[in-house]
Length: 335
Ligand code: MG
Image (cartoon, rainbow, N blue to C red; front, side, top):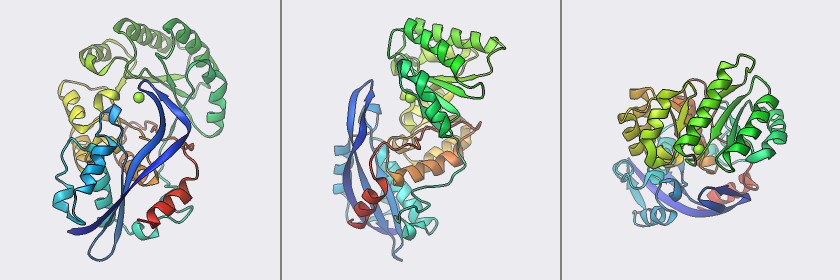
């Protein structure tokens, strides 16, 4: 199959800048792409890299788009190199869109089902770090969230353990809590957190579930996490360690049987991801890369298809950007 190919870079400012352990993030840059097949049918895709998390940079993605001819083939799409995982995702999902349903033409009318897809998925809500979590979970609860994520290793461990103690006694017993360390704990600290969570589990008075601790140790300390994952009852999810499909396969091959956090927008080829998940039946949590509705739709489809154990997904239903609909509509109409 042959497709007419068009693309357009975008930049959008976060409503509030995001603080990560890689510094402040103010502007999300990405690329919207459009494929038109021989019958005139459209398919949309999005490249939304996060280079500091392990994908290509926006410049590398743009260079790739610029060197492509105006007409491209399936062969080109399915042979994008592994060094460009966000491109693999963007092009393949556009290709799937053209060759799949008929949504391409209905797209980009406000309130369309594409901008507000109706998958029956559970969402996890991000609590603010530190003490602020204690008085903000309620707002999220009212919005319907039942799974919460709280960032740890932001402050001294003694302080965080104290806040944690209050948090678990404040949250409703039907809530689930995830702790995300973003690779910031030492081996001893990780043991302390896991032991604390195991003790809570043993304490029958507490019904609240600590679902898992996410990426306790840095990526280089994979063996340490592997060890921890077999030493405690509390589950561990790896995130930073498995940014791309290659890393996912490597960790699985080295024996990881815990949870894998998958960010479809940067993990690479959706078709190969499907194959891998089906073949190995891995336990997954899907998560966003602050993409627009275009990549989000493709990512949510994958999440709906591949999620197991009814785990909540990390796609905020809150808005990180202004006026998504009109903005995206005019961007696509001008392509
Ligand atoms: Mg994480």
